[in-house]
Length: 242
Image 1: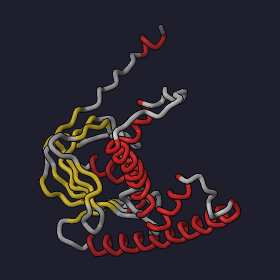
Image 2: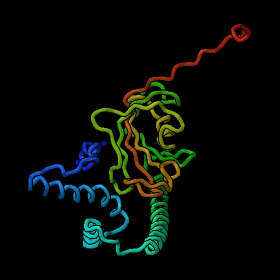
Image 3: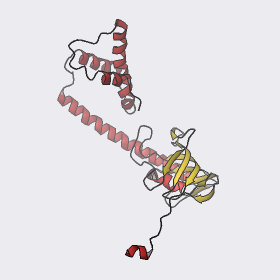
Image 4: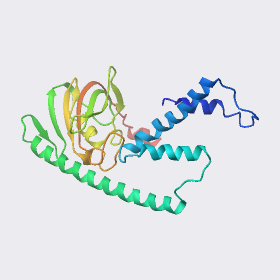
């Protein structure tokens, strides 16, 4: 993880709590340091908060100013508690609304998609299209498989992808989302498939920074290599009795 400038400075200064005087900076360094304190505080927290709730920038500035001037916050503890509860209630309602909208959109897409030429549907509801057939043995649980892939939302937004090098994983029931575990077991080395993964085989109602709750996902996958799982040696009855 990339460390911020602020974090690196705080680490460097961690042993200076006993100092009786300020670290001496030039006038320009003092300005730049002060500016970066505010800038990195905003870039650390603002993107996370702004994904679901807009902020009044002037009130943000007012809060910073009061804190820097050692003034009491204009919102008291009771007001903070009431505001917290109100925000949680609104966030949960928004989460429920978005989850239902995404579920409906995904179901409508899959219902239409399964009628398209070349689309196959498994018993679990996973849909796939063979863009290029592979050869040899299919991937199975326990194999180590190397794949190139691009994962997208229904609107085409890329949420994850490999680049020059494939990602390698030992396939188990819990190593990837269920739709990928099932889809990879349909594939052979050199194969290229498009998987249409319903939400119950993806992340369900658990949102992330890039994936909203109940989002269905589309994966374009190429199997670059398969290393078969080591075969288990059978123990002879004689060996067991020893």
